[in-house]
Length: 458
Image (cartoon, rainbow, N blue to C red; front, top):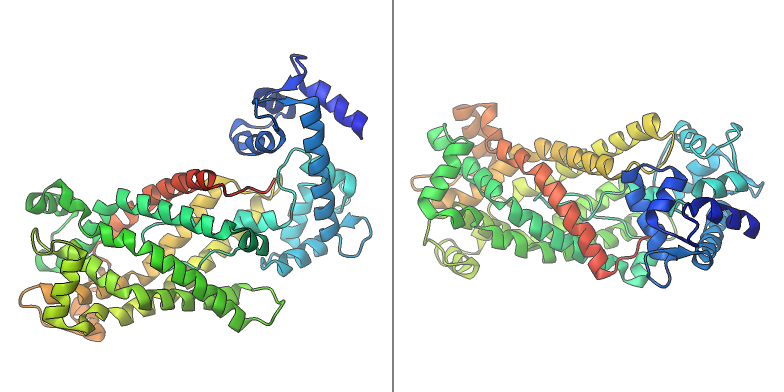
């Protein structure tokens, strides 16, 4: 094997300088630039011991030998019957244990991407050759490709929380990932705050004129309070990320334990129930901040000096109960949002595995971001009428001459006066912020993971 690695090193060392740089590795392996940027960087990060930006022969050999040990362990973990080859049924079984359900046909497509001799099984040599320069060495990486990322924040917090492996929990990687996700969410929400405030204004005031569009909405907000007013209520929206994430993560772990027996892996249904209950628990605790965010966003210049002033005035004039106005539609909205988000994501994942997993099980960043954005958007669409009624209930005490109505009464009034489209007022700016929110949160999340030292498996 050493002779094979030595021959490979000489082949890759195009300029015969005795070291490999990242361009030589890319040219020698004939990998596309975008794909290589991620994978090649991981190889250099791991293998370049003296950090000179190049791999000498000793570093190259050490990387390959260490990598081969990991690949051997991964191969043995998949080869359930110890016959020296991996079959489709063994891939299905291994992924089920890890909480990812795929069909045998999808498993065969994964095998085809690795199988060199067309036997529909993968032996050790095929496995080693395929993963030699691929930092993925563990079957759990397939799960990691397809799990919803904590770093994707589109402004709503009703998605099912992330799964963390036991290693991530023991090493403390989990809290670093949550912190990176929280910072990414804060930057993303701040960047798209003007669109979020416009959505709230259209939800609350759209029915008064019936003519508020995006341009008029922005013009009215700037005229009333200046450019800074476009970020009104954003402070509360950012502050609530930390307590909500912490409570949701803790509650999610507790509900999973309650719904599964010890040692049993969490399936899709258990994830959905646990995630929905965790979301409901977190929303119950931080809901007063949701009310204050809406009041600050809808409020006029000078009406509130800040979060504490807003809380004090609500308590003085309306009592404690005002902090939970709109709570019921908010709670009811969790089920359609989380359910459809998860269902659409699973559907998209299944479609990709069925049709495109011929060369790699890694779908790539663009596919994952697209799937995440589309599934979350579908979840928002399903729960939007409940979100609109919630916002109106939170704000109706501020609108002069407005009769205080409950959820059913508001639904009836909106449908009778505005029809079904009235339940979707403000959805355009809501959808407009999805793509920038996803892009910004992903970039910040990846950078924060690097800053906080969140390790990548390699």
